[in-house]
Every structure is written in structure tokens, then in C-alpha cells.
Amino acid sequence: MLRFADDIVIIVQDEVNLKRALESLDDISESDYKMKSNRKKTEVMVCSKDPENINIKMDDTLKQAPKFKYLGSIFTEDGKSKEGIIQRIEEAKVMFNNKKHLHCSNNLSLEMKKELIRSCIWSVAVYGSET
Image (cartoon, rainbow, N blue to C red; front, top):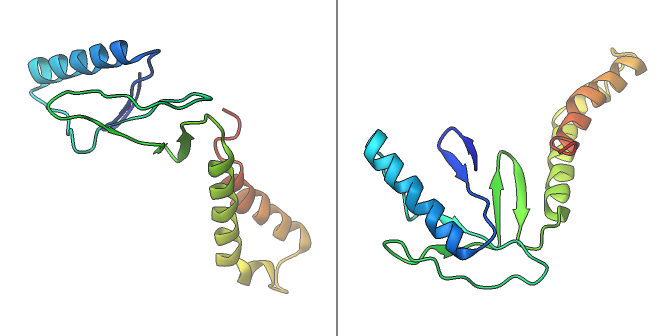
């Protein structure tokens, strides 16, 4: 289980264990903390070479998503990172264009411009790549 603030990701091997984990989460949340999961925001995803449809029924059938974003990283049902990489490159381009006035400035040395690119642009492009 991955938890950050009010976002939770549950990773299991199969449908049965997912249903069991969701029921346990509900029981503990309600009995210990008087909290309820928002079923409208709850989604499931199968990560596999051959994605399949699953049917997890709690109060209603949970929506199956082909991808989701967690802490800035995109997870897809095929398990590949292509979409996340493309997104990071786009974000780095936006950051570069936002700082273009600094990169084109005659008031900064070439070394300072390189350092700005390293710290402001590359950090956005490679965020999360070490995981």
C-alpha cells in the first residue's frame, strides 16, 4: 500500500485480494477514524501485458481506469513509462520557455545559464526517473 496525504494506492496480485484489501481499508477507516472512502473517486487498474476487465463491486461497481497519476508519475495498464516521459519533457519545455528571458540575457554568464538549466529545467525533466 502506498499512502500520501489522502491518496492511497493498493497493489495486489488479483481481484480477490483487491476486494479484501478495500474491505479492510473501509473497516479500519470507519471504525477507527470515522472516515469513509469516496467511491466516486475510487478507481481500479489492471497492470499487465494483456490488460483485462475486472468487476469490483463495493456499493457500486468501481470504475476501471487505463492509467492514473500518483505523486506526479503516470502509471499505465501496460506498465510502460512512455506517457510519463513525454509529460516530463513537455513540462521541462514549458519551464524553459518561462525562463527564456534569463537564458537569452546578456547579463548572465554562460556558466550561470548552464547552472539555471541544470537546476530548473533538468530537474523537471528527470523528476522521478531514479525510481
